[in-house]
View (cartoon, helix red, strand yellow):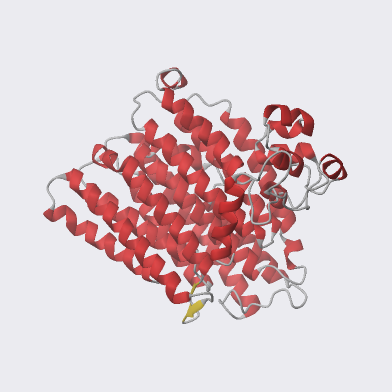
Length: 465
């Protein structure tokens, strides 16, 4: 709750900052200080909650999960301000107002991780969306920016109607807005509730730009000022998935209820991965290509929704961190470029190539690690046993190789090689008999488990996730 209040208050403070601070560069430093204060307020929320959840008037639930994701969102916003904050004044004169809108979006993001009522879900999504419509059209001299804002507003308003219709149907079927008191898995699922679940899924799929609700994404990302596209494609997208995950894993699971919607989300996931990746190949603009890359990354994160298990919560947070850092980095480099075509991109900026490699490799690499040493891509794809399928899911062509071949390329990485086919396979034990199963011992002949596999579990265990 303190994180929500601090971000909202600092949004108001930033509006008045423009009246008293004449040097626009100093406005950036005030915003950075605001993120640090919000981070401390969020930490204080975690101290108050302790090891349990605190529910406020049946509307907001402050838990270790919400505190952890809020820390990720605020930390990513801090990085965004540091790397991209100077570019705000290139968009227009109202620099303080732009920072204020970002803080208001951040206030909505804190709600997505802590809502316990469908009305709060609706409010959080609208608080996030409305400032984005304004930021998309902030460059008033650019017709593409005006077009992006109009398209985003019209399609977003239409999707809001779908979201409200889904909420109304769920309320009609259950008689409550509280996501923990619906009891949809205790008996037969009524057609009214099923229609509500599907409509909510479609509305949230639009917010995270999943296929076939993705058509707005390339035009909006391409037309919006690049500095604001960076925020839309990272922190905002991660917040959409947290809302998606929290709603479906809390209200729409148990008693076999997930079987009613898992197939639909799985089809959306497969279509998002295929269309996002293959369509990106044909783009002539790096910025537009990154928009389709964002769609493809949405496909990866949708596996956490399909899996409907507790470990997916770890995966989505870890993936959000890696994806946000990589994408903010590459957009920060794009801000320094004048030519967004591939001719202007190739060879002109070596750091851009490194950031592009991070955009491709960092999130799939990061999602390898989990608290039990399992490969999270296995969890995302519901424990599938097809090596080729896992390779596509993990974005790792090396998954098609045999373990021995990969050991030649990645010495000392045997645990990941064989866990790519499921640690515990007979071939794994024959080659490394001293492996304990889910997690290899430190005295393993190929070396100890890499540091992230140790550090990440400590974080999740501290937050009890």
